[in-house]
Structures are given as C-alpha cells and as structure tokens.
Amino acid sequence: MPMNFMHRKLCSSASWAASVAERMPGMLAGIDLGDDVLEIGPGFGATTRVLAPLVPRLTAVEIDEASVGLLRAEFGDRVEVVHGDGTRLPFPDGRFSAVVCFTMLHHVPSPALQDALFAEAHRVLRPSGVFRGVDSRLSLGFRLLHLGDTMVVLDAATLPARLREAGFPQAETDRQPGRQLGFLARHE
Image (spheres, rainbow, N blue to C red):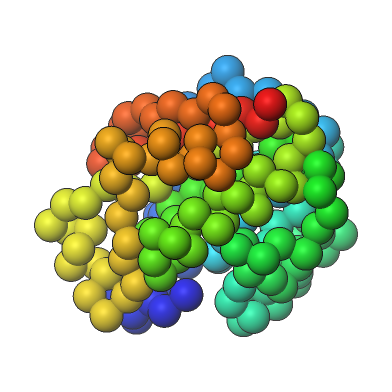
C-alpha cells in the first residue's frame, strides 16, 4: 500500500474521519450487511469506526502491518483485525454475510489483482451475501494526491462485467456524492 506523505496525513486526519462518518450512512443506505461482515483494507480505520457499532461482528483484513497494529490497539476485541491480503483472504468459503471495501481498491496495483480481490470476496461470502464498495473516480485533485502512490482507478463501464466474471450474478454501479463510484454485487 504505497502512500505518499500527504496522502497518509490526509487519510489519518480527524477531518477525513469526520467526512467518512458523515458519508458512510448514505453509502450503506438500504443494504442489509447481516451478522458477520468483512472489511477489506480499512487503512487507518475511519470506515471501521463507523461500521463497528452497526454490525454484530466485524472482521477487518489489512495488508499494511503498521496499520494492523494501530487498528488492533484502537479496536481491541470489538473488531477482529487480521494482517492479510485481500487477494488471498485467510478465511473459509462462505463465512461472511457481507464484504465491504471503501476508498481502497485504487491502491490494488493492477486490474488483475483487483479481479482476484473480487473473486476472493465472492468466495468468502455466504449465498445471498452482498459485496459493497465505494472508491474514488479520477480527477485532477485525486491524481495530485496520489503522486508516487499506487493508483489504479476503477472503470464504471467495465466494473459490473468484472464483478460478474468474479462470480457475482448481480452487479451494479452507482454514483456517490462527490467524485465517488459505488458498486453492489450479490452472491447467488
């Protein structure tokens, strides 16, 4: 998860956390996450802070070891924090009622690895489970924030087909406020 200094500073800031807390209810409106949710790529935990009180059980998998330590220190036993890779999830098939990821997919270094993450999300979901994600769309400001970072932006036109290829028979995108792209995919 290579992130430049300014990007890390922004994503770990109180203002970013407040912005996430304000926007998250809209990102999850009308979506039943069920009783056992997996969050892929929580980073500094802004989304995890919002999710934890909303669901009975939350597991977060984070690739950055330093972030794992910070998340474990903050959430203790309220959230199971696992050091791992979203493209090779260390969980059994069909464990989770929902998988979520927010503003992290552009840090996955290639479309092929994003597709592997989608397939893993499908694998660990129960039948009728949901996969909800929101990520940023390309803009000048977004590009500038990512100088020196990994940045593989999702294409709204091809994303539903990519999710179907990963095993989700139902997949759709939606525009979120600001420059954000959302998607919702359902397991059969």
